[in-house]
Length: 483
Image 1 (cartoon, rainbow, N blue to C red):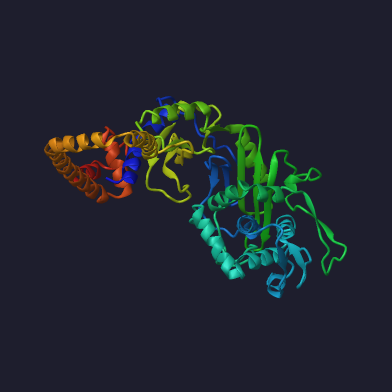
Image 2: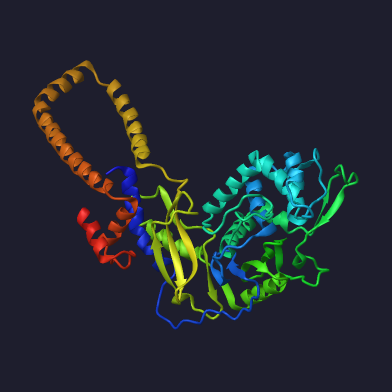
């Protein structure tokens, strides 16, 4: 069994502590999940910005046209791939490949702005030519940028979306769902640069051909402006959208001291602001967010991991941003958890597994269990080499002091013991061959397992039931039989 398989096996065995260590469970009476929101738009969602739990939904997987809220995804991709001080030159295609009368910042062919300027123009003024120019600057063409959009959406777990342009202008092949766009918006608002730009109420654009004195642009999202009748105190940022096919669309991110909320409203008929206010009021009044990466959880978890002999190379802990969502009157002890070894979409590279939490069958969040390298770890081999080196240096000093007579005595002593030593060496060789054969056999057996089967097998060995592992009794028998 190689070292890597051995370490993964040991780690997996101790993952069984997680659900007990993080959140002890006991059977209590469930509080009803709040549902008293009255939403008129066709599609809508309320999501906890931290846990990703869906707190309210209406037609959340139906396909709708997103219109200009598309630009949130565009901004995220641009920020992740470009330097904000890069210079963007506006091409003829960027300026004129837009619908007549659609949102614009008045930029013309040959104008040059920084990526930062273009992001403000796109997110605040909803400038479609700025979206096109950013796409061309980032990917070389609008078509190639659309491929990046679809790949990013897929990486975030979206399954109901397809994008063909960076602006959201009308196309039958450009669509999303409330759930997918909440996932996209959540990822975007975790990026501090996107949030900073998108939360600005105004920005001064530099001079351009059509506006040689420069211009001040203002955020279209009226919930962010104190002078607006739609102003909402806890709103941080968001994006408006409208086309004839999409109707009114709106994304909003808001936060108070207890919870952060993301709303997506699709195909609204001029009710997008009232629906958003209804969702935010509903969320703030009825739900709480509970952080899971607390000091005492980490301490308990680490203390159990430290019991593994000579296994200090990794630190096993929940991810820093782990949290769950619950109705205000719900008891944290009334939740359930399952370990997921198969889902990989969105998981960090160092994740060992995911623990999914539910409350009365409602998904309320997940925590990734991570294996992080211990910066203070010193391999045992290094310690042994250090000790042997010191001992060797000491022995070398002693050898120098040996006289010719002493050397003769050593030779005579060696001849008397040679038979005994030879026998011991032969025995050690035979023992080594046996150990190697056993380990090769064990490694071959374990290589026959998938990663998922190996993890489940180790859990079954220590007493977990098939139900605990989320598999059938027949599959559990097959896994045990294969070993």
